Image 1: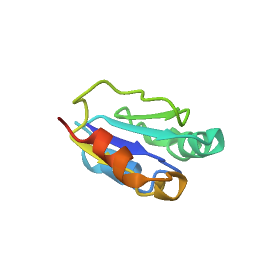
Image 2: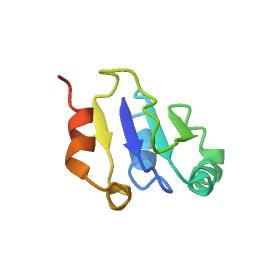
Image 3: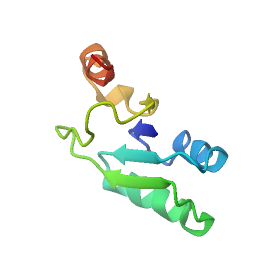
Image 4: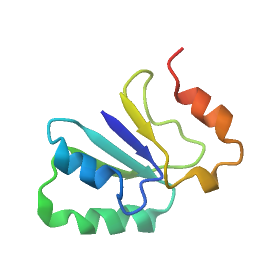
Length: 92
């Protein structure tokens, strides 16, 4: 599973979902407009493995050890201190 935090318009998650249809891809964004844009952009592609959802910045929506890959390429500018956020993603 790939989790894309700050999915934006899906520059990372869209190609991954297309290339690896057997893998689940979840994209989260704190901006509902971005979620809507991505959903509209992939509407006709039948990407059954791509889930896009709005995420509150204080929410931790995933259970431990669920993702093999976590990306945050389009969200680093929204995170004050990146080291603690990234450390929270690392398995203990």
